[in-house]
Amino acid sequence: MARFARLHPQLCLHLDLRETPWPDRHDSDAVIHIGNLSDSQWVARPLTHNDRWLCASPAYLARNGTPSAPEQLVDHRCICIRENDEDVTLWRLRNEKGQKTLRIKPALLSNDGSVARRWAEEGLGLVLRSQWDVSKAIADGRLVRVLGDWQFDSAPINLLVPSRAVRNARVQALVSFLEAELKA
Image (cartoon, rainbow, N blue to C red):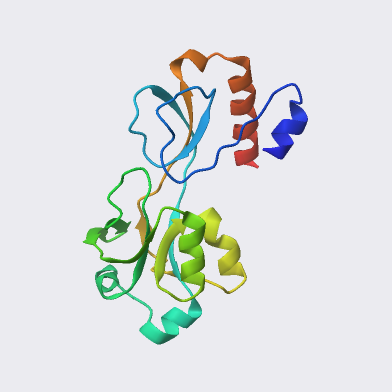
């Protein structure tokens, strides 16, 4: 967003970060939203696919073993992020052999994804997070990807605009910027 602000100094940016849905007051020109959309007052423009990876710390896996099949997740400590009023205990996975749906029992819950990731890094359990959020921790060896041959439901990243702002020049500038940045 800093780069967008430099490119458009005439605009006033208000960045409001939250894990929970935005307030009922819809006075924003645009909202970047991760997950499924439930508010029909917004028009969604898909920005990018958002793969989620299951991860745990090397210490957790050394103590508890590394799950080799989805069914084994029910015997592990799972860390869940409660957001967007979704059922965080229902995990859907698929691979070339088929699909699985599991009901896990969370050991830890948070409404903040960075807290959940840190809990996993500290060895408290398995966490399902966006690939872009855990890739550095995996590269640094703080987390290990688990069940990498399985794909979990993605959480799409959308740009939401109220219908009144669809043709707004500010929103069009943001859309163009985000599309270019996400392709890079």
